[in-house]
Image (tube, rainbow over all chains, first blue to last red; front, side):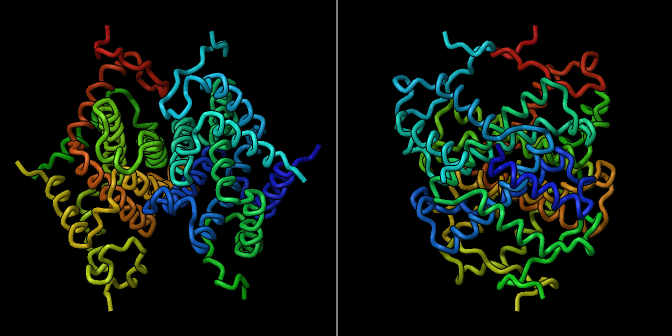
Length: 123
Length: 123
Length: 123
Length: 123
């Protein structure tokens, strides 16, 4: 099955290929490019209150949407080069967090749970 | 059509809801959490050469995959709260970059193109 | 005159030298290490309200202080390798911002000013 | 004794005061602004090789110097608001790292040492 992310990764691959940019697209460099774009995304929120950030005005939302697009492009390209399935790895981390953060213990709390033991079982 | 990212966003929404964590999940806070995870991802690559980063050993790749999962989770959750379609916004930025970086002018070059004019046409 | 930052840079230089770490300390790698530490710093603040961030409890403040130390170490080391005087460059940027943000126009406002013209004059 | 950083912090304090910007300068917001500037700094290095990053051309070095100035300004301002002495905290972390990374064990190696035990002794 070809997913939307796999199709987008293929388009990014072709974009780099026709420009002979594969030489620049090492995972190290792409991680840096991702960090740069996330910096631009964070900067959009830096002076907003929590409430303002939840309801940005149209111009701000357009800039945020544009930055989210840049972040997604570098993230998808990086994962493609490393052969990582982003949704599968995100799902695996969410599985872990469902076990680390039992609802009855962490409801309404922002405190950090201890890491899972290496074998992944929780007692 | 329900995509894989939309399904994952729904799962993250439910994860936050049952823990009463929606109060913490403002776009501002999620942008910070995303930046924190991207920092951990970058740290995995910081002492690797370009070549090493393209062929990480299994333990390093497992840590990178785990960090990519964390990054994806916060990115998908942030976009969901703002009503942004990540693949659509990434596609729109790629459309722009295909016009900004004409292959015949930028082949093999890492130099930055001028921004597109506001109306998005390229001359 | 030897300043406190110049003395600290010298200590960092010696720390790297005796460990034969100069091979890892390229400016590119140090910029990544700095980004990683700033990610850890941001993560300390991600779930705090604005008010909580201004008065962190002692354990949180100790962790923040520790992260600020890591950030400072990589920043000073990076600047040292590039021959950049951090306080001089910070002072130059503050000079610029004093001209970009005239108090009578930007009092109480978080909006962004246009960049200064290339010759640095403001009208 | 008034150090160069303490003097610069006082200048930043006054800059914010006369613009009534103290309302925006919470530690949380300043940590975000710092992350944004570090993102811009990292972006300057993203496509450079290790060698190029060690000897940037004059235009690139000027942009890097400017970004280092921005990073320093937000770092000094953040530390000032929290009452943290940056050079003291950096020195304390360097003390720790001198114990964590014994030269005879870590010479020429980029591997990570285990954290120091809570009481800070190394056996």
